[in-house]
Image (cartoon, rainbow, N blue to C red; front, side):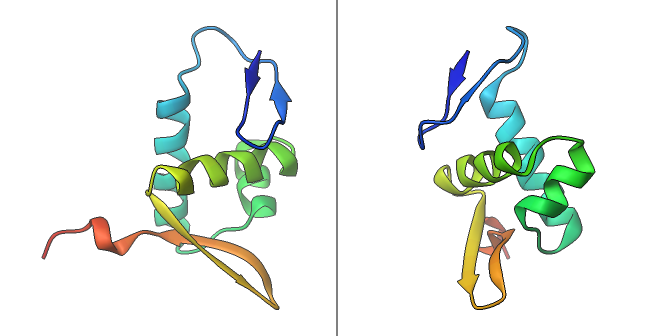
Length: 84
């Protein structure tokens, strides 16, 4: 059982590494350009709640950034991580 920072509990295999999952989510956001929980859920065949938790976890470690606007909550690749 894994508990996200928000308190959401999920059952996962022992072989699943949270840091790897977070990195994969961030890379998918980079690939897509921008993503919301629904888009991540569709791509990974998971629930939107779990997709949002993965996005928030990737944001917490600084891999992606959020834009919370009237259009909804979208996440983008953190371009500050790229060196010139």
